[in-house]
Length: 151
Image (cartoon, rainbow, N blue to C red; front, side, top):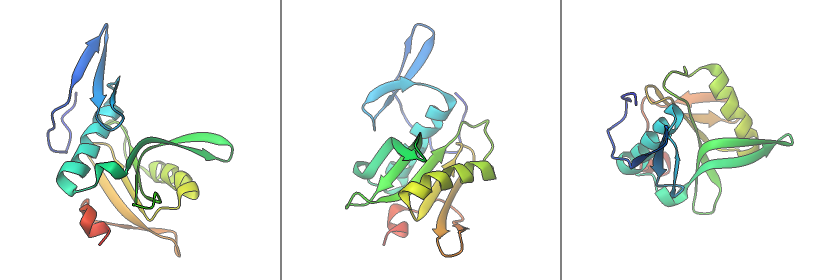
């Protein structure tokens, strides 16, 4: 797999016939190892182990119904009252982070109404706060710690 712009982590990977699978510690099962899954595992471990995000407040592959269509957020962090706080959208490293990606997150946010977005392709990392009054994204220079976001 491609080297990412994230700290190296150790993962359990297995091969079944011609496919590779990575153990997802958050979903507690092996999942197919795709470039996007490689990014997901690295980025979520980075948030938890390096930025202090509580693993217990994380939901992976969170399903939503938006306009009678099933959508799936890559990851969502919740607060202690089970209110969504952060939507995380992950892409494979070869997928550029574009306005279309932020538009995708905005569609999810029409249902979840969070204050923060994170978008990542393993090479570029974006974190922003949504200004609900102006519908403008205020970007952080780097991914903040959990404490910095929620003190």
